[in-house]
Image 1 (cartoon, rainbow, N blue to C red):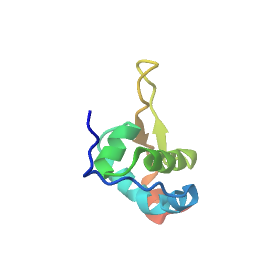
Image 2 (image 1 turned 90 degrees about the vertical axis):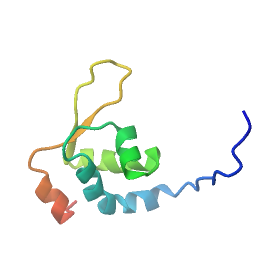
Image 3 (image 1 turned 90 degrees about the horizontal axis):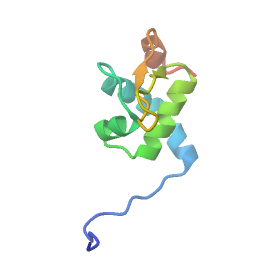
Image 4 (image 1 turned 180 degrees about the horizontal axis):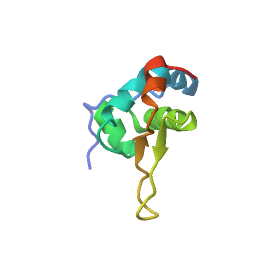
Length: 96
């Protein structure tokens, strides 16, 4: 297949820079997940952000107990993540 010469190459950002953005993206991630559990690729698509950056932000939210992963029906499925009940106050204050 011919290479798409009109596509702009994506510039990879430094991990520390991506991690600094977590607090900014935390509420946006919560907003897209408000009504339904989502996989990492679904969250990334809804936000229009790269999968690798969204993975870092979601794993940070998981670490601080703001979201949780749901059991998978098959071993090769993506985990679905949902907001933890009671985490809305944490998201609004941007603590951690």
